[in-house]
Length: 302
Image 1 (tube, rainbow, N blue to C red):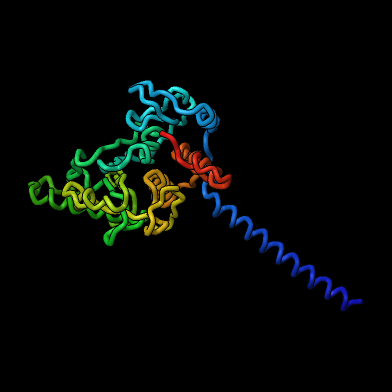
Image 2 (cartoon, rainbow, N blue to C red):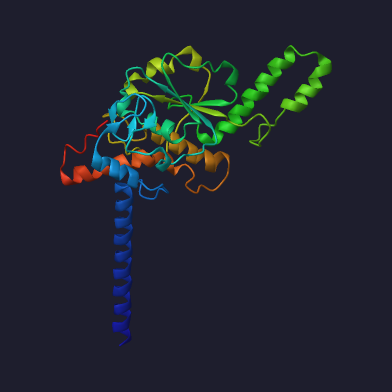
């Protein structure tokens, strides 16, 4: 009797273990199939209605578009502005767009639509000078000199100290003590007035076209940051490139999430999820179309 009970218990444990493994495998599979499923988004009903009604007129230029005008950076007539979420960002965002980048295929416009007060888009070669802002600006782009987000504060503090020392060379000795008190910071990662990152630059271009922008002298010497742990789900992912090469809106979103947790040291509660308001809708639209075999729907109209 005790032997049968022992065998029964062992079989039950094995079944429970297999069930747990299967359940975990299913959850992992669902998560990998839909990486955007847990976002805290505003209602996308307005986009669903717009999709059903088709292209609409831009109230600024009169162009026929779907969802938004990629020239004027505004929603079209059948997408009321008051039904589009506005996202408050902790940093200013500059997007430098390659002149050959197709406007209708760019996700950079999403950032401008959803955070208009914090995002500026420039078409290369018409870009700002960053010479005086090097101690408070970061360029997000992979490369041998790139650092991780968690190391940004340390490197910016180094730049501020270097700038302070250079200023001291031209400062009379009787003023130097005050200058050191104002600008001196220990390189221990601690926060200090004037050391906060204020602006982040993103390049909006196909990966094969980025070199022309990246080598521009106005971007030389900027702190370069790389996102290495995130994977893209962009439907226009370029062949031959690793899945860590993100679309522009993905890069902006994931940078801000990591900035929030790694630099601000605050718990992330979905504050920037609505940056993917349009992106997640289009992703789901294309995913559903591919599953149904509808090739026409997979081509997003603009």
